[in-house]
Every structure is written in C-alpha cells, then in structure tokens.
Length: 221
Image (cartoon, rainbow, N blue to C red; front, side, top):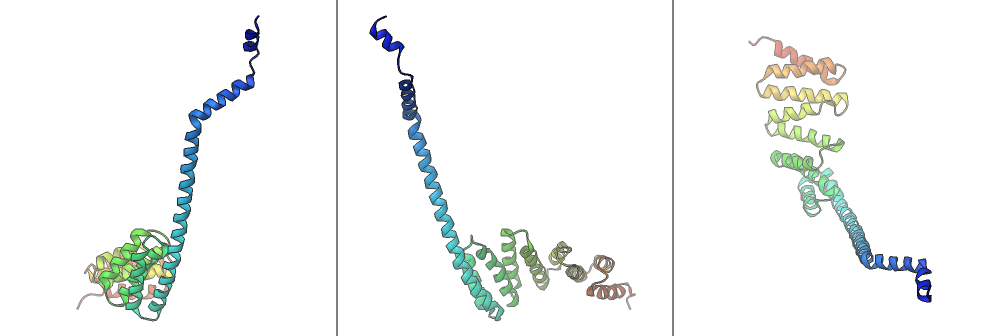
C-alpha cells in the first residue's frame, strides 16, 4: 500500500464533518439569516405599533374624560363635540368606541333621537356583547320609543329581559307592553303584562301591570 493510499484510508473524519457543515452553511446559512432578520423587523414593528396604540389611547381617554365631564354638567353640545372628535380621530381605540356611546347620550338629551340611534347602533356594531353593550341597547330602546318607533323599541326591550336585575326586566316588559299599545295591539300588550305579573310579581312594576291588565279587560264605554 502506497503512502497516498494510506493517507486516503486514514482521512480525518473530523475534516469530513467540517466539510459537510461548511456545505450546509453555504446552502442554508443565508436563508437562516434572512429569516431571523425578517422576524426581528416584524417584532420591532409590532412593538412600535403597540406603543403607538397605547399613546393614542392615552390621548383619546383624556379627551373623552373631558367630554364626559361636560356631559354631566349638562353641556351636551360641548360633550357631543368632544365625543365626535375622539370617535373620528382615534376610531380604533377603546375610548374611540366608547365615544360613540357618549355621542348618542348627548344627542338623546338634545332631543335628536335619530342621530342618537345612529350613534348607539355604530357602537353596537363594534362592541356586540358585555354589560356596556346591553346598557347601550337599553338606551337605544328608549331612544327608538322616543322617536316614535314602537315596533323596533319593543323588540329591543324584550331582548333585554333577563340581562339585568329583576326590577329592570319588569321595567322592560312594561315598556314593551306600552309599545304594543302604541301599535294598537292590545293582545300583545296584555301578554307582556301577564308575563310581568306572573314572573316578576315582587317588583314595583307588577302592581302597575295588574292595573293596566284590568283596564284592558274593562269593557269599552
């Protein structure tokens, strides 16, 4: 066996491993670096977006708090202006969504029931569930009734039965009956009054419901 054959036979296995690793790096190393670079860019972008959103929410919350104070001071035109600014300037923030509710409340107490309903519906399109959403549905029901839309109001009232405390559920059934009377549907009204008296007999609305039932049952003169 020649020296060249012995050298080939005794080739260092570590050298072969290094050659293979070098080959793999040449093939896949750049791809790995690019992937890591892209991931780093995405992470930094997400951080910056999150920080920007937090800053937006702080500004929106501060302006909404000011508008809310004006609302409780009965300065509805000023609270409406502030609420609309928040909703338009920071629509993607929690305060931007809540500003729609405040705008609806301001419109309501200004007697503009049509625009109040529109603001409440915009709020509910973005926030469909939760205690605040149900509170807005309650406001929407009263707004629809005030705007002489008893059919729509009755549906909202009845959907709220069981959402709050028992006194509120009785209130909603009584209001729904009132809407059906406005629609000249006494049978539908009586059905709601009966349910109120049967299921919520301990509430303050039960007595009123029984009086209303008696009036409906009395023969017309």
